[in-house]
Length: 218
Ligand code: B12
Image (tube, rainbow, N blue to C red):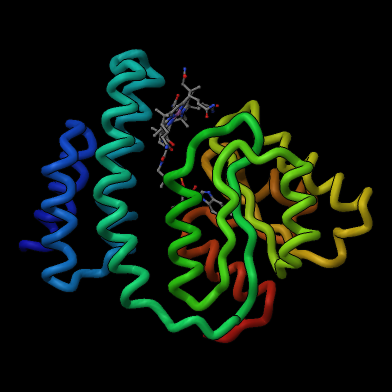
């Protein structure tokens, strides 16, 4: 079946680190009107996970990781454009400030969460990567979001999530905003431990959790 072949091709392209191949497959996904979120989660994501495992076991090196990440980002851009195009029109269901925590430069997961939230009608302010607790606090004061979403991929940066929550409490802002966390370094039990309001294992579940926290239907 063409659809399964394309998913496999996306995965292979990321593993091999060939952006042109990944972009061409992503464009076919769009042409065939396949689900872009599914293509991201079942094609690109397992590809980059495999590369991550190769890196962890010493079979692959940092340049391999960089090339695969660039390949993933190039294809993700095509899929993200499609997710935005087919999404719900802005209906102001809520405002979300998103960012990757201080010390952490991983942005692929956070960006897909941002895109999917926007496509579900949320107003999303993406702060970017390496966001310090003070920058989150400033953003909460400035943007008055309903939710802040934080991403952490490194074990050493996971503690930043708890630091931001403590700072929100210190500044009397904790009651004003819901906190949702995610990323490879985070588990639902860790989210509970630091008293986040929600956790999202992937972008889809992150959107569902955000809707649940804000009592948004659908
Ligand atoms: C790509 C990648 C990189 C790229 C990042 C490029 C970029 N622009 O993002 C580069 C090459 C730059 C990189 C660098 C490093 N990396 Co790196 N990297 C990865 C890799 C292979 C994939 C990450 C990724 O993008 N996954 C795909 C996305 C879609 O998945 P995701 O991020 O998990 O996001 C999903 C969910 O988690 C969730 N989600 C994510 N965020 C949020 C937020 C919210 C609010 C919600 C609700 C949900 C949510 O939704 C997303 C969609 O499903 C992982 C391995 C892995 N399997 O994760 C290693 C990994 C994270 N990296 C690792 C390491 C060690 C590093 C470096 C320290 C390497 C080095 N020696 O320099 C540096 C650190 C740089 C820094 N300071 O951040 C380790 C971390 C180990 C650990 N436990 O701490 C990993 C696990 C690899 C490994 N197995 O060793 N890396």
